[in-house]
Image (cartoon, rainbow, N blue to C red; front, side):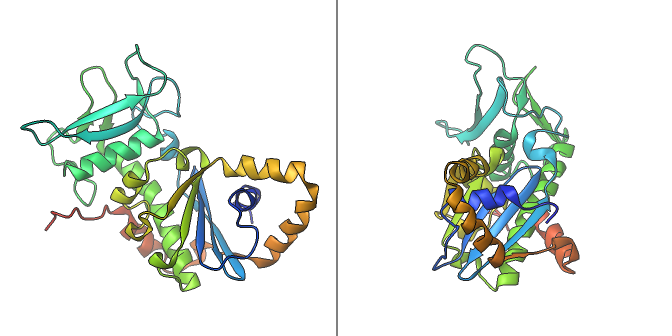
Length: 265
């Protein structure tokens, strides 16, 4: 279709999903346009979600792509006598101060803030400043940034939920979830589960697959005989138009919320 096609097809080859499967499997290529395929015995459901550019640093106050100096991972480090402090790493900047936050760092940071209940289930800061800073002169996160992230993660999560509903497949019936794309292949799966980007039932079933669009294209390029298999894939594919689904708005809105913490009331 207009928004899903060659990338996801190449990705199916890269993940070995061009043939038949015995149990449902998901391929999710996360970027500005989140393409996904739910591979089932006998058919493949595909769709695209307009996640927006937040995962790639756009419309985020201190956001950037994965460039030198960008904070790429964030975690809570327990300290003796304390409740834990937020730590971070940055790309290629051993001697330089970090200047931005890329997509994987944004995901981790919001997961940490949710874990520490600095932001609530609805995404609101529990502080008067309504922002978080790594320190003076360092990157920071605003309330508007959290909202941009919620829009992006809500779109991806809604796409996953509606494809499963269309197929009549429960989340816990999906055998393997392959994450691909520049953002999808660098994110921390635990953080994705914490914020609800991926359903909790996907725990321990996630495989980071890398740049599947490129890898699959290389496979097809060196072995033209595989193009016969492309036709076989096309015969099995059903394109799902999420915008035409009457329940999309409600599902999208629900998935903008963050899951409750274990200690939440």
